[in-house]
Each structure stands twice: as structure tokens, then as C-alpha cells.
Image 1 (cartoon, rainbow, N blue to C red):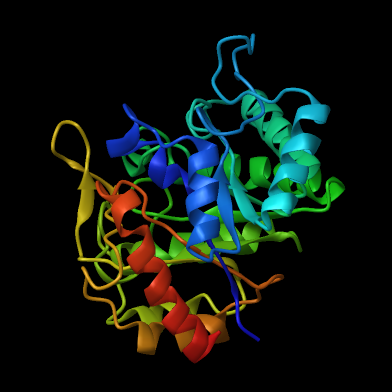
Image 2: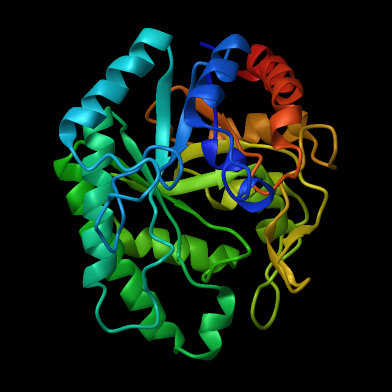
Length: 315
């Protein structure tokens, strides 16, 4: 059975597009024209989102604090013939690791989970929020316990809304070593919790050891890394990697670059079959991620054609 194909809407709103984001309706129209089945929603301005975390929502672009607004959007998406593969919750303004009180993070997760529920979205993405350098400030056990206990609570919230939680590990956030990833997953130990495997992050975390604190942990290839994660992956992003990180404003490495298919080094004919074997996907979605790529809008079509080829071959 072939996969439904989506793309992360954040590619058109953050990074190079922050000053000139592509309007949500324009994104949807283009994706429909290119034959996409849906999109993965970055739930932050100016695209649809649950509202200003600090309140009020009056001047918060894309805010949909009311259930009626969300149901209307869901109906509009159905009319377009587009679905949602998941949602990236807007949690980056919260603290997770360097505070004793994760209440604000949990409250914001609840708002995003409820927002997703009203839109019929079944998968909520999370990450560790804070960079790997936080390990220099907070001891490992304390940091680990804060992440695990918080995400266990988030999983319960999501379960009440009939949702999964998927953790996107990456170089730019804490717990980015292969052994950390397995330990956190195993400690959360909730049936609706899993790993979001992005093939670009997989390369940078599992093969290059980018931004790992202390001694690097790496595998010879992504296929070896994938085998170590077997049974833990519940969501997939596909995109290439050129073995580099996107650069922050000060020129330092931030997180994985996401070059389009063909602009990197990944052997998808080797990676995709192993990724399928290692996954326990609850649905039939694959999502493209062009986060931070400067010409994401222009290369969307070529990426769709490439993933269609992979879908026909492996989907």
C-alpha cells in the first residue's frame, strides 16, 4: 500500500521565510495542485495555531482559539481533499530542562493537543526545546527525569485526545546521542509515545554525531542506527542530508540542514527499506521536511516527484 504524502508547513514560515511567510491558503492550493495528500501543520504564526501563549490573541496571526474556528478549518481542508499528517506544537517559548516547574510547558502542550484534536490531527510532535549545551548547566539525571516525567504527562493528555506523541530528536536539542534517544524512549514507556525519524537528523545524529556534548556516539551508516531504534519509530520525515548543519545567526551550527532530495548524500534505496522495518507506524503518512532550506517553496515540486518515486518503489 502506498503512503499518503505531506510536507511540513513550517518550511514556508520560519528561517529564511520568517520575513515573508507563504500564506496558509496559498500553501494548501499549491500542495493540492502538486498532488500532495496533506500537510504537517506548524502550529505557530502566521499559519493556524491555538493562539498566543502569553495572550491575548487579538494581534496573534493565525490564532484560532475557538473550537468553531478549528472545525471550520477542518471542513475547508476536507473540501480541498487535504489531510493533516501531524502537528508541530509551539513549545519553544517554554522551559523543559532548566526549571523545576514544567507546568507551563504541560499547559501549553494541553492547548496544542486540544487544538489538534479539534482539527482531527492524531500525532503531536515534541522536542527537548533546549540546546545540547544545557547539559553543561543541568546534571544528566535531573535533565533526564524532567524530560521523561513531563512527556509521560503529555502522553496521558494526548491519550485522552486519542493522539500519539512523537519525539523529533535532532542535533540542536538535548539528548541527541543514540544511547540517550533509546534511554528516554524506554523510560517514557507509554504506548502512544514514539520517535519521529527524520532522515536528515538521522544522518547528523546517528552518523556524524553533530553537536553531541562530550564523546561522540555514532554508527557507520544510517541503516545501522535505524536497527538500534527498531520498534520505537512512530512517525517519519524524509529529506536529504549534505552532512552539515543549518547555521544560527552567529554562524555556529544549529540543527540539521534539510537540503532537497538529490542535493545531499543519502542513499534512500538503502535507508527507506530499513526505516520501514524499524518503524511501527500507526498510519500511512510520510512527510517531507524542508525546514530552513532557503528555496523551500521553489523545490517543493521536485521533492514531491522524488518522494513519489520512493513511494512507488517502497511505500
